[in-house]
Length: 385
Image (cartoon, rainbow, N blue to C red; front, side):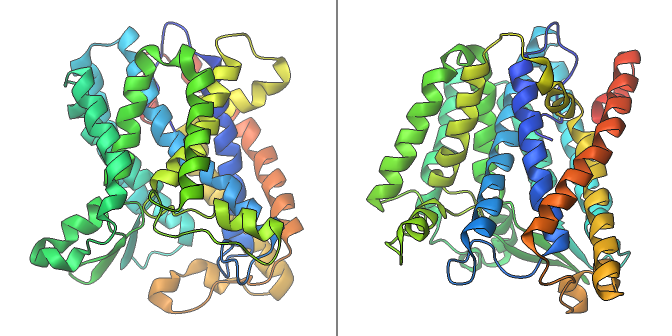
C-alpha cells in the first residue's frame, strides 16, 4: 500500500519493494483478526494477553512505513518525471484514494450499502497527504524538512486542544489532529487518521529519498534509541505514560503500548526506526530469490490492498457461518446497526490460519496484475491501481 504512488523508474530499489511488501503482509494479519475475532481491545492491558497484544503491536509498523515510503517513492520518481508531473500525479492520485476509501474500501469492510457512516482511515489520510505533498515538493528542501519535522515532533504538544474550542470550525481540527466524528447532514464521518502527523511523515520520506537512503543503516538505529530514551523518560512524546506492571512481560507491553490515533512521536520513532533500518540492511544489493513473493506484493500495493480487504471479510463470513450458522452482523455497520460483530471469541490460531490462507490466495492474483502492469507500461490508469 505504501507507495501506492510508485511509478516506473529507471531502476527500482528492491529494498524499498521488500519493505513495502513485508509491511503489507503484516497488515493483512491485523485485518484478518478484525474479521475473525473483532471484539475487545487487543492492547488493553487489563483484558488482553501477550500473544494477542503482540499480534496487534507488530501491525503498528505498517501505516507509518506506508506513508514514509510513499514520500520516498515520490522523490525516486523525480529520476524520470518533472516536479510538475509528479505534483499532478500526487494530487490526482490522492483524491482518487480518498474516493476509494469512502466507497470501495468502506464497502469491503462492511458489505453494507447503508451509507450513513463513513470512515477516514489509512487510505483517506494517505490520499490527503499526497494532495498536501503535491504542493510541498515545490518548496526548498530545508523548508519541506522543517515543516515535516515540526508536524512530527511538535504535534503532541497540541494533544490537549479539543475540537470544540474552535466552535463552528471544530470539524477542521478533527480532520487535522483530534480523532472524532463529523456530521454531514444525515451521514457521519469518523476520522481515525488525523492528517497533521501523517503529512509530516510523508514529507520527511520525500526528503529522505534524496540522499539519506545510504545513511539508513545508522539513521534507523538512532531513531530506535531515541524512542527508548524518550519513552523511558515519560516526559514527552506520548499522551499515555508507561508504568511497571504485574510482571516483566506486561511491563514491556506497557512500554510499547504507544498511541496510534493520532500517531504519537514515540509511536513514529518506534515504528519508523526499524523500518528505516531494514532499508539500510538491504541496501541496493540483489535480494535472495526466496524473498521474491514479498517483493512482488510490494510492487502492486494498491491492488493488494483493495483485494485483501474483501478477501479478509469473506473469510470472516465463512468462519462465522461455520461456527455460528449466522453471519448477518458481518453485513452491517456496527456504528449504525448497534449490533456487535460476530465472531466474538475466535481462537487466535484461527487468525493466523486465515492470514496464511489469505496470502496464498493473494499471491497468484498479485502476480497476474504485476504481469499486466509490466506488459502495459504506457497505460497511465494502471499507475492508479
